[in-house]
Amino acid sequence: MELIIRKKPKRAARGQDGLTIIELMIAMVVLAVGILASMSLVIMAITGDARSKQQSNSTALAQMVTEKIMSIPAYTSPTLTLVDCTNTSFNLSTTGSSTGSGAPLASSGSVDYTQATVSNYYMPYTDCATQANRQTTYDVRWNIKTLTPYAKLLTVSSRLRYTGTGGSMFAPVVTITTVIGQGT
Image (cartoon, rainbow, N blue to C red; front, side):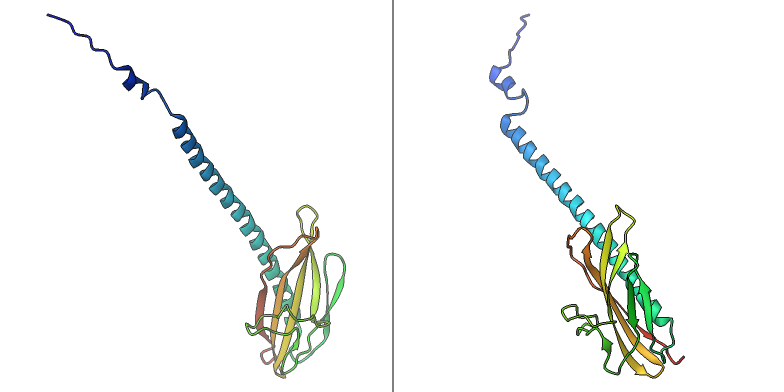
């Protein structure tokens, strides 16, 4: 009986040693693309969070002005006062007309921010934020249309004007439209 020992060719063993430089480069490119995609998702999430916070603040401010004007009977038209966190007082006119008084409205029904402001129907309201002692100013405008002697249509719009550090960002307009009075 004869024992035969076969040796593997060296060429076949060399092909199974590990990664080639090209395979390593391809793996690095795939990893880099994955990391860049993840970073862009993080940036989009941060931007979306900031926009949502700004929009929530605009909504709360528009609601506050709406409630302040709704607190008086529709058949009266006193000038109300509102004070922001910097102790700046603003006069809020509640006078309406059959065509609408105050800030001009766009065809969409919201306030047209491309038009000039109207005295006592506009306020640059400053909100003192709780984070990092930053102040944010919102551009708040309203329009009041008299429907009957006892009912008015109130449109209040609010948007971010600028931040305390002078930066700017996209600021969607938040609009609240309601009928006030309704026969009271």
